[in-house]
Image (cartoon, rainbow, N blue to C red; front, side, top):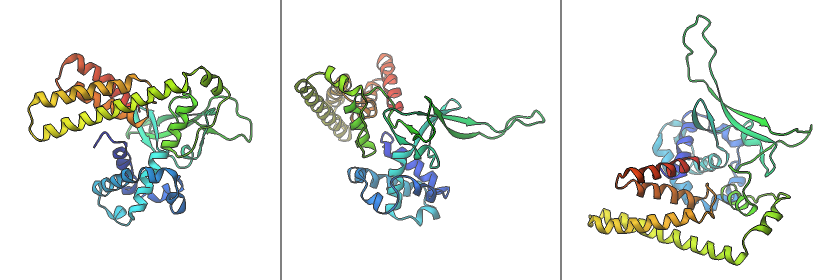
Length: 293
């Protein structure tokens, strides 16, 4: 299950709870009570949140976790999914929650702030000795344009600012539960896009390819569990790999879309089954793409 985003969220949640910081996250959306109960994303991810909550309880059975209700943990998981910031610093990528600043900035398709990570290293020992400690992870908010006094400070919740309106809208609704704002350039870009009929046909082919790939993947797993001959297992793995390649090559899904993410890591797994150097090299590119998403 390590491929599922909820697993990463559960690990962050366990760290937050074990450190006694769960109360500090209650200022994050969705807040406890009615706001969480009525959040538009909650119903869509209920099974995922339930799975994550079980992982959290399994991760650390201490006094902090024991005192929390199931709903408290599930709310925290959703808050982490919505508000966690992936920042790079010190040559590594980190996940962090920044309730005071980072999580308070609203989304805009025309943001005036850029978020980036930094590591504040401990002060150098005056005696010339080695620096001790790992440093403190910081979130830096950097203005990318002149900001007038009184203007709202905004960031982009999406990784790419150049996405067309339809993709921005799909991602924001799926992950955060609200629609995208339009840019002046959206209308011109939409006018240049393929016709609705051609787009609809491409989407139907994508749906069919994803379904066939998933069925073949499950069939291969069932055959392997039953001790079936390798030729039979390989047949379904080949079908699954071909159809997942069709999903990725269609280039209709954003990098963070769940179908694209799933197709990426599964195709990478299939390519490494035979340990062939060329296939493993192709799989490495896919793994890197999955990590970015």
